[in-house]
Image 1 (cartoon, helix red, strand yellow):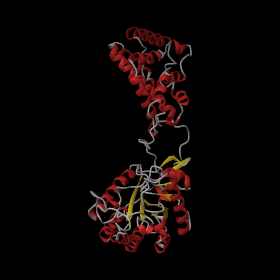
Image 2 (cartoon, one colour):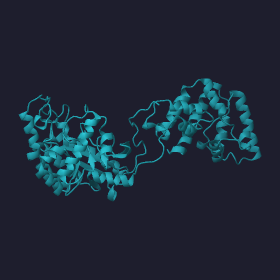
Image 3 (cartoon, helix red, strand yellow):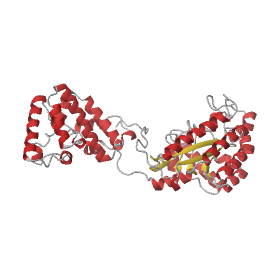
Image 4 (cartoon, rainbow, N blue to C red):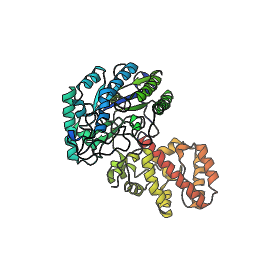
Length: 474
């Protein structure tokens, strides 16, 4: 099977209603990344100094050497920036409402800060063992790191983490974290404004996505924020947009990423203060930890059960969808052979795959699909020999309750139409009434064959679309 692993659809056009507690219009989720003391450093057994997310633009790792400037920039975060942030956040939002992404080795070197986090009611999630790159680690090495991070985190904080975020992750991170930890959520994703479920670690794993745009890391990258006003404005605009969506009945989550050594600097902290005061000044704002959001989502929106079309074997797929195009299982066989992915696990997704095969078929093959369709109110209907789908569709338009005169009229029109075009008159009866079907019959019967062949094919696709919506949900 050709299968594409990425999910390009997500929640789709019908977003779930978050139903945040107390009718909140938005969930604001603040993350304080605590990495200072866990970054790359030969003191920590690493090969070189840190080069990521600091005031030194374009910094490079120094192999085998310590980097005094880099080290002291990180130390600012633990010595000064953390305390400024802790006071600012507590003053504005009160106790709780903040999640710490804590690097385990950094937390082990920060007993006073850990105590302050706990006294403030902050959730402390795991940010991995060390603040290092994981993309080149073998799965075995990364698994060992995850296990040790959980062990050390539990030892330092007194409880196991319920959330996980590596950040500098690998393609294996989510799978490994899901299998190693009993996490209420994993945050290594930037794919949505709402939580979502994935299959990972042999189970349903909740993802509570994070952010790289509402993130002070953009002070430390090229083309990022150059002053606090830009950060403030971007946070306010993001909040205002999502708050308005919540007012219209579609609440979302706004994630804000902070780093003690970055936004903890005075000129940035004051901008953060103004942005958060703007948010706190609105009604219906829920400042929540990720743990709280995850627990709410798991209760309000548990994982969906049932087969996923993109993961069905060929036999199951054809059995489920072989009759969507009338008496033409070869279309389902062809669709199953396409590159399918999670974005096909919906009525629209399966329809697109089936329609591709139908559209790519020869005129002779498509004619075979057209001729497989029964006459409307014809002899097969009278004899009770229609497929279950066709029977229900014709009944829905009242074609099973015709008078003798109406039935004779339909049969006469059917005969004339087939004689002129070589295939039966096809229309998506679920979109129509008995009267509109008759009107279309009279209007279309005089078309040239090419025009009517194209219209009949469009109607076949529409019938398939309606059948899938009934089978899988819109």
